[in-house]
Amino acid sequence: MAKLIVDSEYLKDVEKARRELRALIAYKNCAPIMLRLAWHDAGTYDAKSKTGGPNGSIRNEEEYGHEANNGLKIALDFCEQVKSKCLKISFADLYQLAGVVAVEVTGGPTIPFVPGRKDSRVSPKEGRLPDAKKGVPHLKDVFYRMGLSDKDIVALSGAHTLGRAHPDRSGFDGPWTVEPLKFDNSYFQELLKGETTEGLLKLPSDLALLEDPELRRYVELYAKDEEVFFRDYAESHKKLSELGFTPGVVVRDGTVIAQGAVGIAVAAAVVVSSYLFEARKK
Amino acid sequence: IMLAVCGWHDAGTYDARTKTGGPNGSIRNGAELMHAANNGLKIAVDLCEEIKAKHPEITYADLYQLAGVVAVEVTGGPTIDFVPGRKDSTESPEEGRLPVADKDAAHLRSIFYRMGLSDQDIVALSGGHTLGRAHRERSGYEGPWTSNPLKFDNSYFVELLEGNSKGLLKLPTDQALVEDTEFRKYVNLYAEDEEAFFKDYAASHKRLSELGFSPPPSFFRRILKKTVAAFVVAAAVAFLSYLYDIYR
Image 1 (cartoon, each protein chain N blue to C red):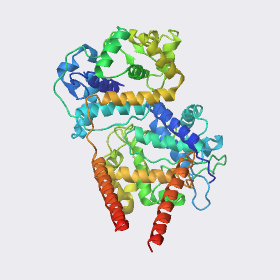
Image 2: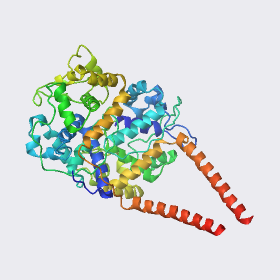
Image 3: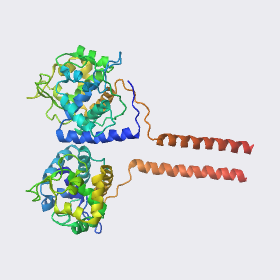
Image 4: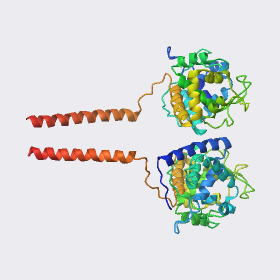
């Protein structure tokens, strides 16, 4: 994927976008749909052909028209509001930043955000995102294709701690957890309960995590230990948000270069003077 | 927003001369919660109790200030540096230390100078009214100061300078900022330059949240100090041996 020049102006714009996103999400309570937008932009990645991924292509009408993206125009419009005040940041970066902020402001882990994704107008074909009605072989197909692992599948599924399904979008209905605006490990605790709590949702693809012993191991770990879940989730989320993206060198108006140069000069001076000192002693 | 006010009203009782009051968690005492200035704040104190139940080690004093810092950050405001270590106190100061909304610039100065704060702090911190609203049953006043009371930005100052067109709230103490020449300088600056407001606000908020509090040096700082001292001693020894060598 091509890279942007990330200079100090760009970084300032990113920080402004971060604050605008926080305010927007606080005001509209829209953390879940913003997280889903980030995920659906990134989750089209194919590691073999190096196509799709977090490149802002989801803003193309043909892509947000895909069935898997039902309802996401709302999130796209929210992001447009932010973009109108932050002119430099790419859409690709903005959508991923929205995902990161959504997790943070709902009490989830802080995920490091590296900017520099370039926008693309090329949308992948429909069908790359996982289908809620399917099971383990399908989940593994989709996520392995992205270059992700079993641990990533389970950790990322934990994001269902936020939000709900809507009959007019996916056909399913309801939240997975009792507090759908709080990011914690309750998704896994609910999943392990034999009797589904009244009013809560379990998709076929959620239940699939219990059927495979490899995947189930992680479900049990995360249900027991929220800190471990947060640690693994942050790692998997960052990976997902950077599929096909190699962060470039960040140029910060020459300060780093200047400091590096000074450091090298001082070290060289020390080496040279000690050499001269030794030579004179002889 | 309530959490931000809770932090402010716990800290704002500080008296720099007697070193009483300040951010020490005393606001949770029944007597202090009953002060007229604190009408409605029981809501915030109860919200914080939920969090304290899951995190018993943090002091109430730290929790209330952290809540204020988070409230600003999460609504799009600047990131304020938070240093923990405040001790809890059960002693509440007498009523009357917080500013009263229907007074003037002289009153504001007497209250904030007593805390050890400045004119710039008064104006910057008033910008906290970018968030929230007044409630008739609490303060007697009604309504928000800005069009988006859940977004932290400089619109409080912009609205102050624009007069009453939108029917937004302006307390007598808000008006005082525009009528006083010293205060007005800052109002003009912050209305024009949001970055300058954010920078000054963060500094003033931090100061307010640390009134009467001297952060103990962190573990890392103590180790760092010892390491630097050791390094200096080693360098001095090395230098002295060079000199000894040369002059032998």
